[in-house]
Length: 447
Ligand SMILES: Cc1ncc(COP(=O)(O)O)c(C=O)c1O
Image (cartoon, rainbow, N blue to C red):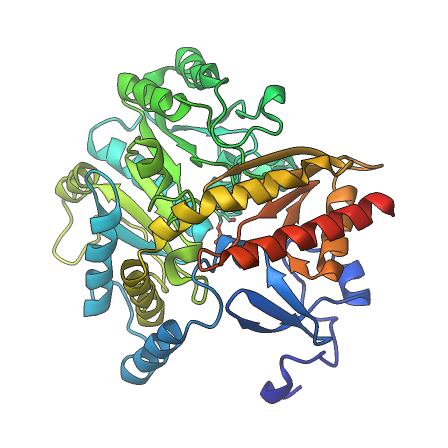
């Protein structure tokens, strides 16, 4: 197939082993996207669909943003690549300064990675390096949370809490990882915003600190809102309590803001929205509006200082033996800088905050559909649970297919539909998403 024809149906679907996909059924009945503009996607049959999940929480600024395309193209013309070890280019420093201005507290040191998984892996390593630098090499344990998702590298997968992701790889998981229970309690069904109950779930961290020795735990990692398992919103006071327990035991608190970062909650970060500052914070996805892979780890000044001060190597020896060929490459930085410009120019987090009530009202208006067992939402993210049928996952995927036919595209995980509109949506676009969800979900319920 020539590059000109790349967006049409290819001659063969056999060779590409697709990620997180049912390859066999997809290849019998492919869903290929050929064009994306603003809030709309077009598939290979010429059908136009509204994007109900910003890709995978990636494109809050809409598809095909000219400013980003131009910035990337200009960068490619000027400096397409420079290797990032003991060498750099100005853009990555400029971007770090701009990101650090938006992160809360003294999360001012910025390490670039390739994606969300590598950002989490990096956060894990930085936590270990920090404790070693402080003379606490015995702190090797990590605490994650059930129904958390942090990516698919070994470390990120181990601290995550999605059972199917780890089952097949049980023999190679990272040692020393425990999980707190998730915070999604039965009484949180159809609760809009933060649940009033469930703060006591944070005491799981205290229990693990008692059982394993708080002095042996390097870090606790959570998503402020668990995104990939369907928008599980932290009970009021929960994140603050985690912070208190971490402080008591000298445990680092890592917020994985790969989804919640860059405005999804209505503030720049979940940390700001909930008024709890972690020690390390990860981001990816919307950092470049999804167009070029990039992950970011923001780290407190004191952690950076401890690690760099502890280094005793000769000139040129890295203080942290970690990095990626594609850490902060020019083309990703160019996209991210253009995204920062748009964030500032369009006051985009405020826009997300103002649109949120309208979106959440729309989402909760679907409550009457018989097969829906729960709806949750916060900011510009929501989850809809579909009643399990036969086997877990079947109902969610069938509903996704009916919604796709109805003209709204999104991601389903298990039996949960993940809804995360773009921040550039106007009210009419939210109406369209909700109307098409109603059609698709109702058609599934009737099927
Ligand atoms: C919270 C969170 N962390 C990490 C990741 C992994 O990101 P990536 O797929 O870019 O590696 C994801 C992906 O959805 C995520 O939602």
